[in-house]
Length: 77
Image (cartoon, rainbow, N blue to C red; front, side, top):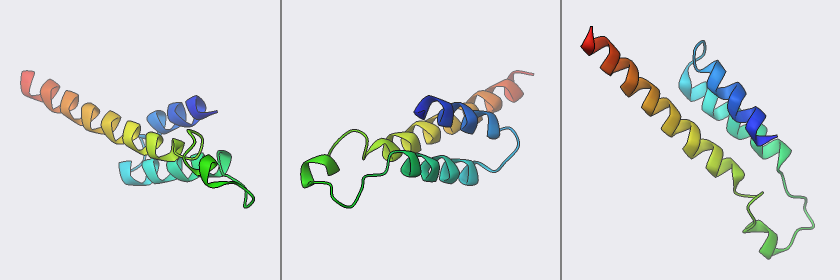
């Protein structure tokens, strides 16, 4: 599921503002990997609970790299 969220976000970078794309992807990740109210403290440190942080970091890095590549391409021409 996370892979589909990331692929969709990467495709949306072409048409929508980056801040909006990243925010939507993080919110969707929170919805799909949300913990219930009866979870213990140990589960709050689990990988599923922190996937939204991973999604945010990955998409920010992807966008920054994409901008650098586009700037490099425009300087080469």
